[in-house]
Picture (cartoon, rainbow, N blue to C red):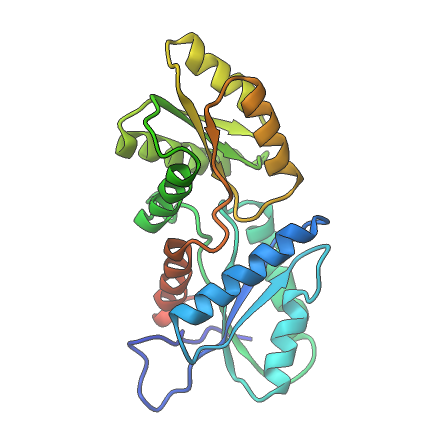
Length: 261
């Protein structure tokens, strides 16, 4: 499978829309799978006529290799694969390329393009990502707050943690309040520690932004820990906010110029 152009408003009139395959991490929590399905529906609604199919690396079927093989068997010759990941860590570097390789092993030829993750690409924090985080914060706490914690799932990859830190810094700057990072696993600090440090520094109304795409046990733990530490609000995961659907489509559209998958 090689690289192929993405479908979108700039595609040639004769070219059929290129299917978009969304690839999520996967979770044992059924709420997570339903959130990804809702996101797929939101992306499809934002780009009528384009086939948008969800897939998962673990716990939920179908996997991305199965979806890609199904597209090839149905006569498709191109596809765009969008990692539903907020950092470019192990799953983007290893698991997703392996899934594409597995799909390559059998069935008709299919040109596949893998896009950037949804988190910072080339160090740039996309405005749509910030918009989604701010929307969820506003829904959780419509009043004012004087500090924010960006709570992420966590990773041992230091570059991935750096990208989360950039999102926190830009989010805090756009809100005009101090910002800290926290992680639900794999790296310190925990959200309760981050909230407590901000409160010790004088913040009285600390809100927590959820750097998660879907609900699950990690987000549940963040909510409990943050509330226990005195946070005034904890945002819901991004799920199907319109800004996220827009970001996914722009990631897909950015694959118009060939580059190795």
